[in-house]
Image 1 (cartoon, rainbow over the protein chains, first blue to last red):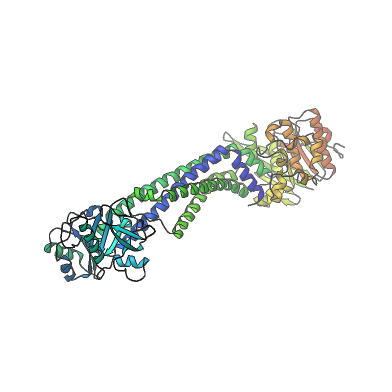
Image 2 (spheres, rainbow over the protein chains, first blue to last red):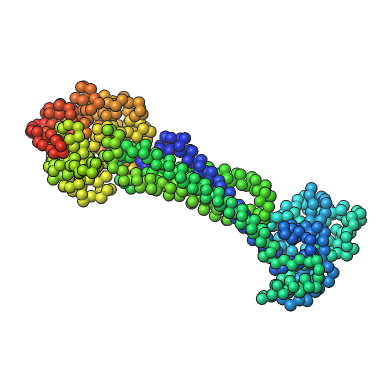
Length: 398
Length: 237
C-alpha cells in the first residue's frame, strides 16, 4: 500500500475518534473473549488429556459409597475412608482379561506443615504399580528413595524440601507436573512410607477404622479384547459393596462439564463476533454515505476503483488491528493474572497450555480478528468502489 | 488535436422515460484552445464535461484524448489520465476535511507519486510554481488552514489550483467563477488564459458572460445539444 493511502487511512481513523475507538473497543472486547475462550478451551482439553493419561488404568474398582459420581476417587483423592474387601486384589488378578492390577491406599490428613487445607496421601504398591510410578519417572530419575515422598504441583515444600506429617519429617524427592485438579494437592508415597505415616498418626492418637492397611481402590489394566461387562459381573458376583468404573465412566462427567463450558464460551464468542461484524458494517456504511463526496473527489483526481476499495478495507483493517492488540493485551493480563482463580472456578481439570499452544491461540485470534473488519466491510468497500463520482457530487449540489 | 468527442450521447431514465442529457455532440479541442460552453442550468453542460473528463462513460459515441480512445482504457489507465493529464474543476469544491488546504491542493501529485499527503515541511515545496498561482488567486496566505476555515469562494479558488498541480494537458472547469466576486472571477479567467498561453487546452462551462471575452471557441448547450456560438482565433488575447 502506498503512502497516500496510508495517510488517508490514518487520518480518517483519527478524524472521528469516537467512532473509530468505539469500533476498536468492540473488536478489543471480542479479542479478549476469543483469547480467553481459546485459552480456556485449550486448558480444559489439556487438563482432561493429562488426567486421562495419568489414570493409566482401564478400570478402577472402589468401595461402594465412595463419591464416584463426582469423580472424587482418584481424581480428587478422597475416598471418605471406605475400603475394599480383603482378597479382592488377588481375585481380580486371577480373572481372565486382566493384564495387571495394582492397589492404592488413601489417607487424608487434617493438617500438614505444607498446607492449610486437608492433604490427600495416596499410597501405591511399588512392585505392581503402573499408574503413579510412570508420573514419578517424568520428574525423578531412578527409584523413589526409601522413606521419601513425591508431591503434587501445588504443594509447597519450603527450602528444606521436606513435609511434616504428625511431627515426622519426610523428604520430598520430586514434585509432579500439574494435572489441574486436587491431585495437584496430593502426596504420593509407597506402601512402606504410608505405613510409617500411619504409625506416626497412631502415635499422635489418631485411630483408623481398620487395623491393617486396606485398599482404597484397585486399578486394572485390561488385556486387548477383554470383555469389560463380563469382568464387572464376575467382580460383583464375588464381592458386595464394590463399584466397577471404566475410564469412560470416570471421565464422562468431566467431559460433559468441559463440553458445556466450551459451548458456553464459543456461544459468547459467536454472539460477540456477530455483534462486532454488524457494528462494523453499520458504522462503515454510515461513514461511506457521509463521505460520498470525498470518495467522488478521489475518483476524479485519479483513484482507481480498486484503490478506493482498498482504502475502505485498509480503514477496517486499522480498526481491527487497534482493537485486536488492545484486546489481546487486556485479555493476556486478565488470563495470566487470574489463571489460578479461573481454574478453581471452572471445577474441571485445567492446565495452562504450553508456550507453543499459547502462541498458536494468539496467532489464530490475531488472524481471525484482523480479518473480521475487512471481511465485514467488504460489501461496503465494493459499493464505494462502484461510486458514480459525477452523480455523487451532483446529489449533494442539487 | 488533443480531444475529440464524436457522436456523443449520455442517456438517463427519469420516471420511466429516457432522455438524452448529452445528445449527439461533436466536440474537439486543440492544444492552446480556450473553449467556453454557455447554457442554462439542466442543459447538459456538466454532464458533457464529466464525459470529456473521463469521469463518466458515454452511452454512445467516442472520446479520443491524445489519440487514445477512452473506451479502450482500463479503469487504472483512465484513472491515471484523470490524475495526470486532465485537471477537472467541479462545480462545488470538495475537500478532504482532515488535511490542510495545501495538502488538498497537492493531493493529485501525492496520488500520482504514491507519496505522503501530509506536508511536514513547506520549504521542500519551493520547486512548485503553485505558490505564484495561489498568489494570483489571493489565497496563498490560507494554505495552512483547514478547509472548514475557508469560505466557499476561497475553496473554489483552491480547487482550481488543485486541478493544475500536475500540469495537465487539458483543464475542464465546471462553473469556475460561481461563488466568486467580480475581481476574483476575473483573476480566475486570467489564470486560465495564462495556461492557454503555455499550450494547455481549457474547457469551461459557465453562465459568466466574461467567458465571451476569454474563449476562442464558444458553444451553447441547449437540451443536450452543443451548438457553436462563434470562434475567435486569439481567444481572450
